[in-house]
Length: 77
Image 1 (cartoon, rainbow, N blue to C red):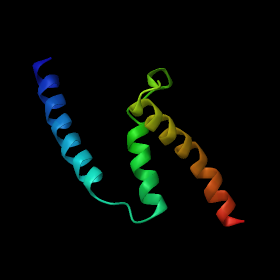
Image 2 (cartoon, rainbow, N blue to C red):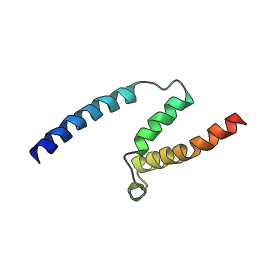
Image 3 (tube, rainbow, N blue to C red):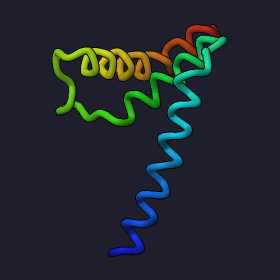
Image 4 (spheres, helix red, strand yellow):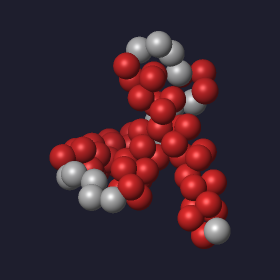
């Protein structure tokens, strides 16, 4: 258990560093924005969505992620 907790803390620290780098790096393409939204939505389940700013942002991220394949298909046509 101690080993697992140590591993978790290490991974959590790495995640926080990467998340900060993503947050401060401006997206230069629509795909970059979609990548950021995918990161946001990965932290939320359907049960977590509420009327808070975070919940609305997560909902928009999930919607965008769901629409991305349709957009790619439309671009190919």
